[in-house]
Length: 230
Image (cartoon, rainbow, N blue to C red):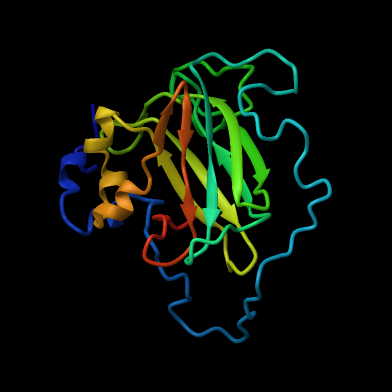
């Protein structure tokens, strides 16, 4: 029997809906509510010491070792550019991505859904952007999955992104969604972003042949919608 105290996804209809979903808060201030004795000052992040930071094969989520067996699912590539508020490329930004397998199962001990894991899916990737701000990952298209605790609504297929860059005080977290997915239209997390242009910035562009483009803008009017890491 479902817990009647847990709200159904249909209740997430006003501007406060993201506040009802644990772990998904947009641009929330992370300042303590009460004064503390000593506040450690923030400093700029970077530059990165890139030697050893990214290893061969880290940009391929669909196999655990370079040249090894491939994961199940539809092969895809996801690439794009990381840009600043003036549209200039951000070089050597560190991008980390993670995702579910083709059946919607995460390689994570907290994922207790009955779907089987994929022994060949690494499910995590890392890359540094090039001089022109570009990056590229190989993977498989992730599946949808139920979100436990909220009447098990189905989350649409998506890939999680984390971005570190010089001048950024904390990592930036977002998710790339796939175009044309019916679940996009009813997902409370995606639709919890009020600004339509910001919401659209999270939909990857289908280039055909399994290739998707996802550009990330760190600041400014065209800033990608980011979620608070929690």
